[in-house]
Length: 544
Ligand code: VG1
Ligand code: CO
Image (cartoon, rainbow, N blue to C red; front, side, top):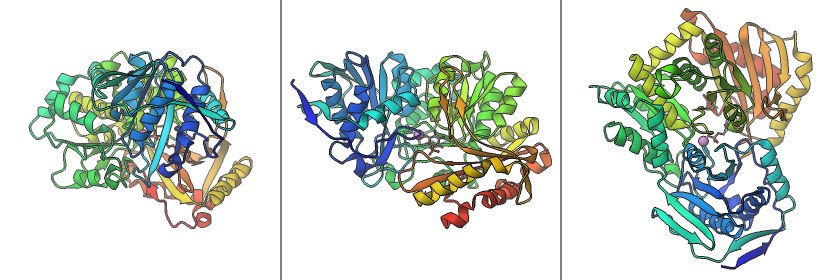
């Protein structure tokens, strides 16, 4: 088959964000847009020729088209072999696992994660390196630089490949292997968790679970593992059929968008355990009866109970959390006498720590938890981890969290998202607070005294690379903190995230409603930023 060289010109707007390149489907459908980005990627990956890539996505609208384009381009660029999930489906942690198991050169994830899908929704593409994790900043920066000068892309003339059947085919000189998206991942879960105990838990009379796959990629994984291998009754997985538009929903597992699950968990006959995952399967929300677990608390609970789970019985080497994530896990690390690392937002910063064996568990406040079993956050893994803890300890989700607070204190925590803010206004709000940072120490805002303030910068302890401007932090008396940063995953206007945290050691006061407990900080944030007044918003779009 003849390689075709197609002349092109740089297209604006190809700067990868927190988690790859994420844009409206209509942007990706522009002639050459996807091709320019993919060719730029291939152009900056020395050593790719003759090697293996893993390719798959969350099944959203345009997934199937993009895969065919990428396969042809991979063949034209001399890639040796591409492993593709059947029907082009792979969850993000599932892809990470395959890259590692098959010692692939890297992987391409097609997803916009928790963003809505469909013809008017979002699409995304992310490159993962050979450790199975998101490419570090120096690679994404090189890709972006290449998009600014690109002048041609390579492809082949060929019919679409049938991705519905498992097995091998060829495209020119390139091998294509269509693999079962679930099999390898399910084996890995069996190695980490006590499946016998989990089976016994799910067979206990009266014990019920509800897993909401939100019509996204975890449906087949959850059905195979929770219902198939662990024997949860049929129907324990809801919204389990992946749909290109996620059934019109917003596949973001938080109390606002996973409202169906939350309603079930608040009903009189609520199951004992509820959970949801996002579009690409890397996030998780854990819910007990009438009790939602804050993701930062979830990470801390997993760390504190890790040795109850076979895969972590030897203990944790360390833990890591993104900067805006609450300090709950820090308290566990201190008690366990293990290191705790604080990284910028985005899973790519955990890769070096995990590779170097500096930490075992990591997490983010945005409903992401994971470990060194892959190099992505992993939604279903977190669900199995929680179930394994419940199987060993007994009790309820709520009692486990409340006991945790009693022992370690509670980091009362909330994130307020202001979505679709005018981009210029959002930039100015952030810029003004950044300018004010050096003057804040000693000042009082809405009755709270500022101790110090900084613009978070991170030096990677493994390779020494420095990432600046990762979020504005203001610290107050008594372990309170607020953080302001602009989202790097939104596709409409700007999304501003305000993260609020206050430490509460007093068990009696831990029961206070979260937003009420944080009101002084909410007021201080408004006094310092004017966010609501300047963006014209009465309240946040989403509160988690
Ligand atoms: C958000 C979250 C961040 C997460 C990222 C990707 O980024 O805050 O914690 O790593 O999404 O998650 P941002 O820049 O919008 O705050 V996912 O599930 O897209 O892979
Ligand atoms: Co995701």
